[in-house]
Image (cartoon, rainbow, N blue to C red; front, side):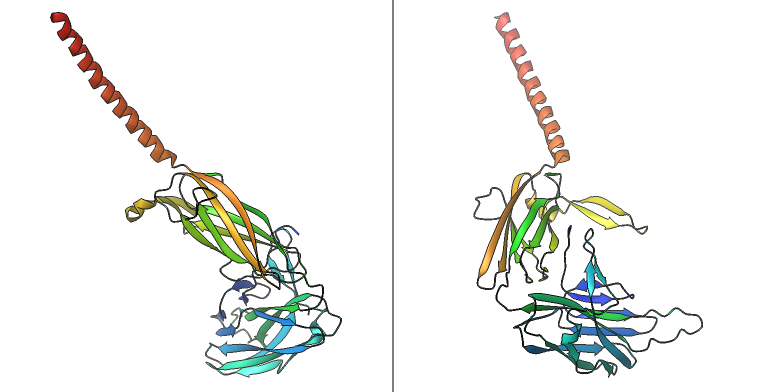
Amino acid sequence: MRYRWLFLQVVSVFLVGVAIFSGGSVSAQEPASDFSLQVTPSPLVTELKPGTETTLDLRIRNSGTGTEQLTIQPRSFTIDDNTGEVILNHNEPSEIADWVSFKEQEFTIEPGQWYTQKITISLPEDTGFSYSLVFVISRTNNPKSLDGQRIIEGSVAVFTLINVDRPGAVRQLDVEKFSTSSTVYEYLPVTANIVFRNTGNTIVRPYGNIFIQRGSDDTTPIATLPVNDGGGYILPGSKRVLDTDWTDGFPVYEITTESDGSEKKSEVWDWSKAFQFRMGHYTAKLVAVYNDGIRDVPVERQATFWVLPWKIMLIGLIVLIVLVIGVWSVLWRAFKLFRRGKRKR
């Protein structure tokens, strides 16, 4: 399970089989067929005891201009072990499909109106520790193509997590790796890489900060970077890779995307930030926290790196050498004049 990660936010599916995870409400918009839905909350997360049931409210708004006849269906998903990509499947999650029911599996929403879909989850006594699935909301009947135009089948998918509160449930998180993308940088940004692994049997959601310091024991950090500020969850037995950038420096490298899709790296000299000139040895200190069901458990790691603006340092060295040569020349001439004067006496 190399680099399996899961960013548990709402999944916006713009093409069939394509899912995008993001925070807040979800919007999927298809201009060709005027399909536009908003869904909240995101994600759906609940904790149940074995043998109990709960009803979740999923609010859906029709942001389009036409009446939408919709259906909601549970779907399973897989995670690519190499890339961490989440892939929606066309089949129902066989393990829990019989435990899920809807107020109305098919429903209609007028333009601009909200609809509350009630999803009931009933757990039997002999359940596991956690379950995950995706609810896909799509049109009951997709419109037919007119004049040979291609119709894009839009849908919205919502990630749903079920945590089971039963004896033997273990919430445990490890930092498998914490490092920077390089040990030496010319200019910022500096990218810190975190690999979290869920070694328990229930979902966990880490949070915390990365403190940029001159030394590991400094009490006042130069910068504080948030960790997992999107509130993503990590499934049992899986990994999640997070990248966090330290950017408040002078000068900095900025990467822009050209019209042909290529990336261009350029130096940005914002003289209003000249006081943020960075040079020397730094320590990145990670302080992550997760809840083990009883208390918050901290996990700490450190990584070190150098910022060496070699072009500026080279120019400074050249200026210093010129100054030293100039001073030496003046002193040498003064010394020779002094000796000549002394001989004439």
